Image 1 (cartoon, rainbow, N blue to C red):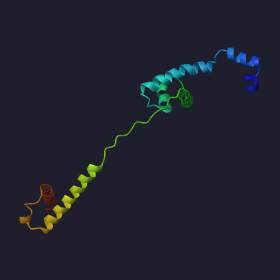
Image 2: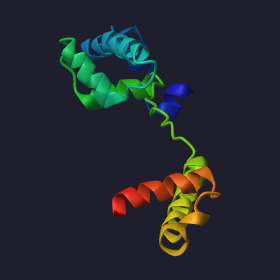
Image 3: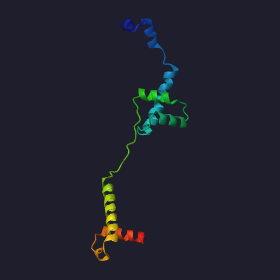
Image 4: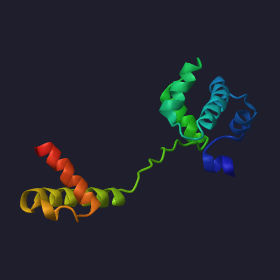
Length: 136
């Protein structure tokens, strides 16, 4: 029944079933083990280009597309490293407050009399002093 469905003879099916594995399938099985080892050593991060490069460094002559096929057949997939990015919310706030303090310092140096500079907050006073050193 299955032979009719697949369009092959019974003798052909049984001959195929008893046939020895080909040299290509044997070398693929051996290479698959190397690919699994390299992929496991990279903790799953390497894709087919890096696995190919690593295998070539180890002296195994192999192409990238063959490694990619074996990785697909073995359900191996490289993953990209997650990038760590710090939140910039606090940095923006700090930068803004420094700009405001610097602007207040510039205004204080040019517009306010020196007797008024003493009670200013420390941040503004430091900006006023730095600006005064730079300008004068």
